[in-house]
Length: 496
Image: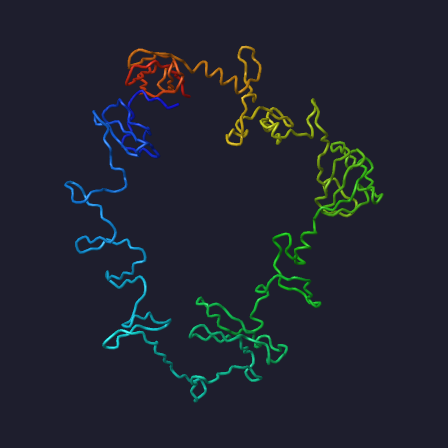
């Protein structure tokens, strides 16, 4: 079913991409001036000039030769003025166009094409193929006065006075001979270093030009940090590591001073004690009268009672005390800090230990917990819509049966509705439908009170979608114009 346009289309000089003209098997009997068709029987493009269909060029060339008002269509190898139009297969041609270009072979005066490596040379009376001349220069090795001639053998080898040179494979490519040399430990004497500040090691460095020159350095000039990671246990040979920095991460080595500082004053769990008698379970000695304490000593109450017999500091099971000031026996209550003193689990009527956390489960998201407001130990719990995940579309599918919480103003309580229900309510209040079959101007009065409306048109009889000129004349009027009289139905939907 074709899409029906009831009015002209203005492209405003934009391109019509991917278009195709109407294909017909025969020329239509009726047409209007300017109509264009493609006759698929004759494969010819035609236009109607108001009285007849006129054929346009068929795209295979412009024919004719010697006929007035036509351009000649040339054939292969035909002479056109001083030029030749050639389509001969396998033709060999040469021409000079700012240089020399050739397709095929060059031949000498005898018709020969020469052999690989030969040169084409003038003999004065003709042009013939000749062998390329060969030349070379004699050279003398450094330290020697005897020149090396063609066919001589030039040998490289290491010995006890010149160790470290290894001769590799000789490779010849064309006229280039490559002799591979490398460092070798053969013939090099073995010895242990005796003076690290003067004994040297050989090393190479890329100087930026990829020359990798061999250089030397003293053994004790190479820092330990320059070597790679150890792959097994490092034996220090009963020697110390000195001048070590304090550690900063978990796997750093620690200095003695750092360890001493960390241990002093650290938490030292001493076990449980009876808060009434002061007896420590592990020592059977009273904490109140016969125990010396150090900073970091930590005791846990196993039997409730008054700390050091003072009613102002009652301790219950689970409370704990931490020594803040070292003391010889007997210690005093001021040497300790009391942790969770007389604070138990919270109840509906008693403030105590307890908390309310935000939900992290996807099924419970939306509950927000605020900090205590009314009194210590209390919290405000409410619906936190702002921090819930937003619907993003795509793979995040929203179903028409998904529930939405709403507040019923008539019943003054919370209810739920669905996405489908919300859509139905919105559509009934924001969409109106009208029909018209009068002439070419169709006026639709609506009650949506805005120009921000979406307008859809369809044929009232066939229900096909149609297109026409639509003008939002005012906040309550939409005017539709068609080139010919049409019976249309107009759906007007409020946007936003």
